[in-house]
Each structure stands twice: as C-alpha cells, then as structure tokens.
Image 1 (cartoon, one colour):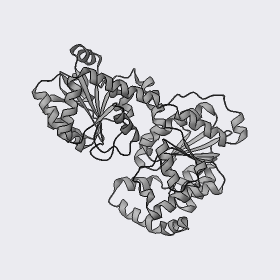
Image 2 (cartoon, rainbow, N blue to C red):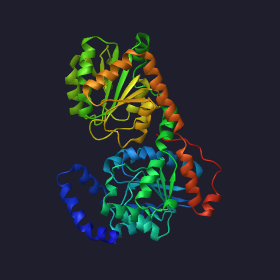
Image 3 (cartoon, rainbow, N blue to C red):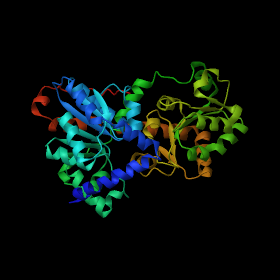
Image 4 (cartoon, rainbow, N blue to C red):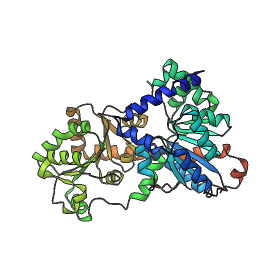
Length: 444
C-alpha cells in the first residue's frame, strides 16, 4: 500500500524536482546526465560479451564510493571475469569517477526510480546480484529486484538514532523497502537494533563492520610514497621540530573557528605549519583564504616556491589523504556545518584528531572520543584550549595519535565478511568457479 502511494506521488515529485532544477545546478546536472541513460546502458550490454557474473553496485555519491571500493576490489579478485557495473545517484560522484576509476567495467548514473525506467534498466543489466552502499536504496528498484528474485545486499548500512525513517509514513515505506532486500549488513550492533525497530525481518540483518577501515588501511599502504610537500620542505620541518596541523575538507564555518588561533600563532612566531584543505577549493574560496593570511600564506600548487610561510592553502582536490601523513594534529572538517568528513583518513596516519560538535552521524568518532583517540570542541575558545594542550604536551599528542591508529587497525575486516555473504547468495556455478580467497587490494 505504501509503495502504491509512493508511485502515485511520483509524477508530482518529478515535477517538483524539474522545477527545482531551474534554480539548482546540481539537480540540472543530474537530470541532464540521465538523458538517454537507458539507451546508453542497452548499447553497452549489446556490445559487451559477458560470460561471468553480472554484478550491479550502487552508491549515492563519491563519499560512499570510498566504502564500496574495498568490496569492488575484492570482487574483482574473487571473480576476475565478472562484469561490474557501478552506478551513482549524484552528478558530482559520477563526474569524479567516470573515466578515472578503472576497477568497474562500466560506470553510469542510476535510473530515476520510476517503475518503467527501473524495469528497462534491469532488463538491460540483468544482474546476478545487486549491492547497495550505506543507505541509498530506492523503493521501486528494491521491489523490482525482489520480484525478479535477484539477490540484493545493503552493506555498510547505518541508521542515526534520530532518523526521519522513524516517522510513521517513512517508517512504513522503509520497512517495505528494506524487507525487499535479501541482506542488510550493518556497521554496529546499535545499527542492527535500529533497523530491527523499523520492523525489518531480523534474519535479514547481520553486523559486519565498516569497510572504510579496510579502505583507509589499503590507501595508506599505497600512498606512503606520495609526498605533496617538497623533500627540502619536509626536511626543514623535521629538523626544526615543526608541528604540522591539517584542517581537512573544511567548510567556511570550520575555517572561521580556527582563524583567530592561527593569527595568534603567527604573531607569536610559533613553530607551526597550518595546512588548510577546503571542502571546495575553487579559485574564489582560495583567494579569500590567501587574503585572510596575506604574506603568511601560500597555495599548495606553488609549494615549490615555499619560503617559510606558516599557512598552506590546498587549492585542488585529491591531495588531502596524502597530506594527512604529515599531520601531528588533524581537525576534521564539517563539524560546524554539513557534518563531519571521514576522520579515519587522518587517524590511520596516527594524527591526533580533533572534531567539532556535529559528529552524531559518525559513530566511529564518538567511539574514538570515548577511547581518548580524539577530542571534541564546541567553540573557538574550546578549540584554542584543546589545541594548546596538544601543542604543549608531546606525550598527550603522541598517545592520542597512537590510539587513533590502533582504533583503525582494530576496525578492519568488514570487506571479508561482506564477501562471505555475497558468496552465499550468488549462483552456485559462479561460486564454484571462483578463486579460493580474495586479496584485499584496493584501487584508489
């Protein structure tokens, strides 16, 4: 009944989205990117000789791809001739992956969740199994997969304590959608309880952990040789005992919170290098940051000309993870705005992690705080207090970083557990022809 109501409302929802596209570039990009999608997918499969397993993997955007990458890589190792089709809902995710991320055989947008488009899409793809990452499962897609008896898995699944899913109508819709899935592989026991509270069949739910731990460990192994700071600069930092502070994926509110502390540090001539990596490092935002620190700042793209500036502004994407390996202290962006970026990316390098208050959706961050592997602050004054403690107490800083690194190491293993579930669900003929154990190598 709830799915019927959803489909009756779809024409109105579609009209609202198209109206919003007039004012929102991202929505326009998503709609225009799907123009001719079914024909594109049909043409790909008509021209592709597929003799192995057909695997459909869906993510919402580029952030969720980080959780899917370990699974995709392990699937490639386990089933070398499988055809892996990766879909994105978000245009930013699709545009950042298409033509750059080589592990899948095909990358496309996901279809809009209208019954006819979903059926045409699945008619072309004919997946043997469908995998969804974290949360992005659409009602008609889930129902059609169940109707066709195609195994489906939601992995790295999580549910916030105060989720909108618990509202009466939303709860009914989510209950129907999630009960269409074959398995829901959640991150924690708390997540299992929240999904069960929605009325999900408990036999469908299993706790397997978070693939992001596997991903950051693998990325660290392949990134240790990447240095975005020149050798001479790193040598000077080491010789002088310079403390390196990295603010990663920062929103303007995050930058504003620490600006006064940076200015005070520059005035005192502290032995600190501040590296600021904006969430959106466009030219206008970079120019504003350079103006804020003037002669004391330099862009990362010009770092070869570094002459002792105290502030480095990262003016391109793709550098943050590698820069974290230089960090003694790392502040994770989003804690004063849209929600926290991935703290594990800094923790895996052994940085002392500090975060703003908006981390409720990141259960791993609260666990790190509880273990003294990270510290929280809620204001400019609290930031200055926490930072000064870490700056002045070498033992505290080192122990915090060591606890953060150990926390990440202890969290690995979700990918192997997810692969065990996939092997149980795929066709027997495909299962028997696979290799004995997958290698957990991860493409970056």
